[in-house]
Length: 46
Image (cartoon, rainbow, N blue to C red; front, side, top):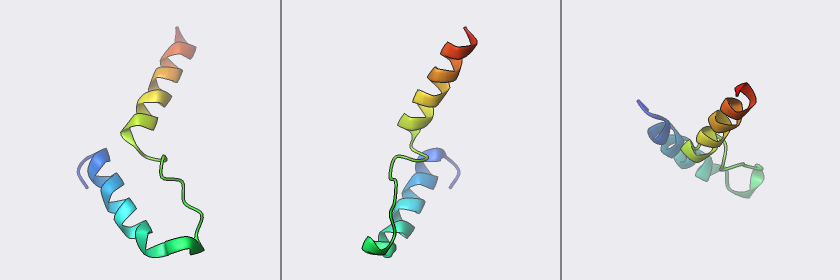
């Protein structure tokens, strides 16, 4: 997709086909996680 949210939605749709055969972390690539990582790096740089 053209945005993080669109890419996340596309990845979630594709991963839904994996069922229980694959361990999946749904938090990776979310805008919430990216915001927290950016904030953490900003704190380290301060």
